[in-house]
Length: 135
Image 1 (spheres, rainbow, N blue to C red):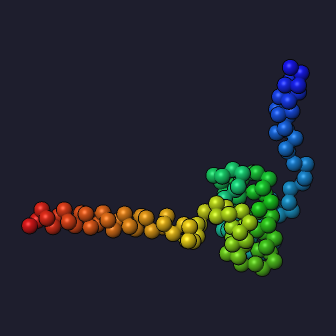
Image 2: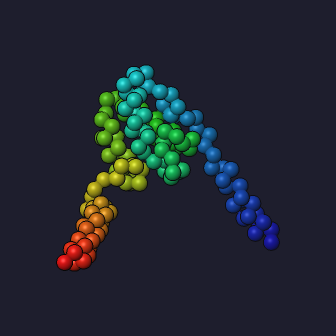
Image 3: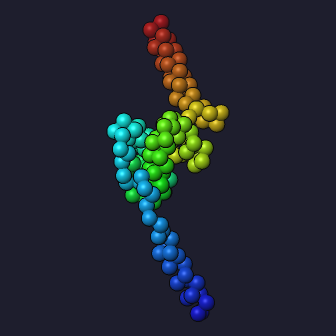
């Protein structure tokens, strides 16, 4: 009984131990000095999904990983890297889910082709129906 109580208390206390004691990244909440670079960074951050929140862009999220990603984006923009290269790096690192702008790949092309195929099928069926009834 004592073992079960100890195990339960450890499981309950684990989330409290998960809080980071690390300070936030330097550019997590600080804008770049150059307004043009900050505009590029803001546009890119608005199109990247927070991996922890899963519904917010990293620009809107208060999660620590979103702050780290904002920092990475701003540091790379400041270094002169292209926003699409940064997006590609993040997709390679975290997967396609991190981007709100999905890529067409050998795995995802059916997702893009299916609506067009359904639209074409609907057109053919409607055309048959209306040309048959007109004759």
